[in-house]
Image (tube, rainbow, N blue to C red; front, side, top):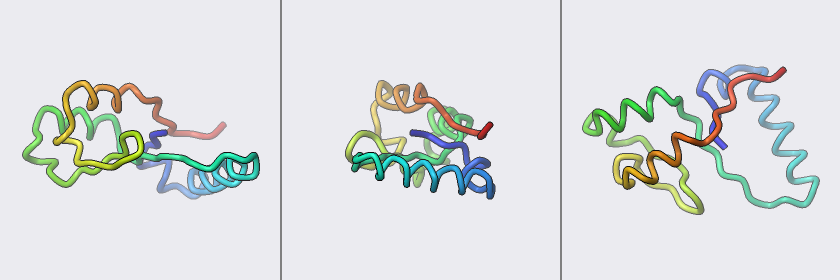
Length: 87
């Protein structure tokens, strides 16, 4: 899952994430992986990797620096749905 920074920093977003995790766990699920980074930051990191050396992302069971990932994996992370609001 990928959340926008603005959503994760807002009170509404924080509550929604907490509620989501609680519901997830109450229903017997046991693993979640989150990235809280904006699409714009990921695209900028692809274009200017030297400026994003410390950008860490969750891939699939492990974390790594975004710029260390292959272009295929970077694109996969970009394709993940970004959640940015609660209706």
